[in-house]
Length: 145
Picture (cartoon, rainbow, N blue to C red):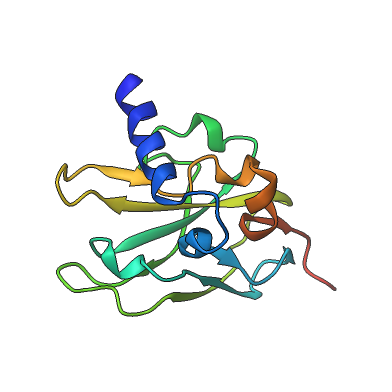
């Protein structure tokens, strides 16, 4: 638990609170979407410093604080940014919303540490911060009939 807190603090320190430095934190282009709608996730400058791939998941905000890692069954993979062994070149991920229950979701973006080889969620807990919430939370609604 202690090492997880230290890792979380380290990741958060990479995203200091100034707006200029917060560019790397992913941004969803929609606040509301239905299953099968297209959503775009934009990553900012600095994403190319991560070891590819970044694995991007949707997770209900109510369960995000209790995730056990990238193998947690409550995560829903929506895409990967970059390919293993290559530099990340795209700052954008386009995906279709999978069939999910209605509710609020946030992103979990897992990356493998270059020195540790361990997977960590670079967006862990950020949706709870008011300055990032609008960028990281999407409400999934029923499809229109």
